[in-house]
Amino acid sequence: MRPIQMVDLKQQYTKIKSEVDSAIHEVIDQAAFINGKAVTEFAAGLSAYTGSKHTIPCANGTDALQIAMMALDLQPGDEVITPSFTFIATTEAVALLKLRPVFAEVDPKTFCLDPAAIEKAITPKTKAIIPVHLYGHAAPMEEIMEIAARHNLYVIEDNAQAIGSTYTFSNGITKKTGTIGTIGTTSFFPSKNLGCYGDGGAIFTDDDALASRLKMIANHGQSRRYYHDLVGCNSRLDSIQAAVLNVKLKSLDAYIAARRVAADYYDSAFAGHPKIRTPYRASYSHHVFHQYTLVLEGVDRDGLNEYLAGQHIPSMIYYPVPAHRQQMFAEFGGGNYSLAITDWLTERVISLPMHTELDEEQLRTISFAVLEYINK
Ligand SMILES: *Cc1c(COP(=O)(O)O)cnc(C)c1O
Figure 1 (cartoon, protein in one colour):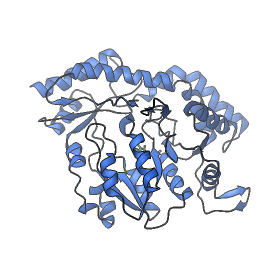
Figure 2 (figure 1 turned 180 degrees about the horizontal axis):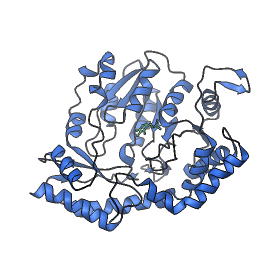
Figure 3 (figure 1 turned 90 degrees about the horizontal axis):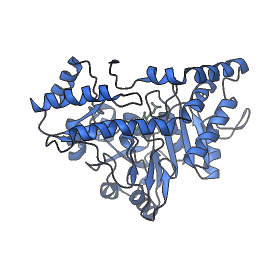
Figure 4 (figure 1 turned 120 degrees about the vertical axis):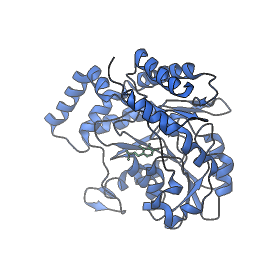
């Protein structure tokens, strides 16, 4: 059996090696390292894939969030509602701009922002909501967009974990996650569902004026070379990464399908177990399983993590400390929050290996070991 990894990028690469290698060499041959043809091609390809009118590539998913908030001209002290149960980048980007992160509770089933909690967190200072499509499950966008419209708020979808996922509205219309809010952001960090071989990110919007601001901000606020209209930053996707992404974008749907096959295997292995809750799949969401995350009840979770490690099976806690308990947010009153569901989940979640290359033998070995520990 091949060694089991949380993410197996090496094995995935071997299948597309010749295509990726020649795409990288083409960039080097052309010496168009920044904003070369591969970047333009990738932005167009991703727009076609997602249905977003504009795709603005940038250096990483954290910058994408920062640039989104800069483009919306949010001002120091403005409040932005985010989950605490997320990767730190979501909330860090808010704080970096001297905006005020306001942490709202998540739905224990979907791990995504709870609309009722958003509503409760709104004050006259609230300017935006950042729903996170955590683990690849879509946040309840219809309710979130309705709340935002009623309170005149921007919505920035953090789609770093859910590229390729969709949300289906009650009228039957289906849209890709990241293309529903005012702005969507994503990451091409290597382990993400569409990962490059370094850092990368992108920003989505259907709004022409916002798109041109986003594009300018990501490139020193310049409207044309050496004419700088806005304070921006240097956040570009480099051409070599775009070349890799051009190859991998063609396989994104196949990658998602492989993740869903692995998730189905785990689901049936753990079905009905009284101590294991398998990932919920809301009918509106096409889950893309960036992570396969269990919620354990009455199990020594850290003991399981160690037991699996002893069997050479990696598992991870995403995330061991929620944002409101991070020291980083002490000055934002993080310690004053009481987010019982977030804390409850933080103590009980465990993510199993999830990637495009898992075979049945590996899945059987992992599920067997998990059950062996829990049933002992
Ligand atoms: C990975 C991730 C980011 C940040 O992306 P980087 O490219 O690593 O900067 C932001 N939000 C979430 C939810 C993520 O998982």
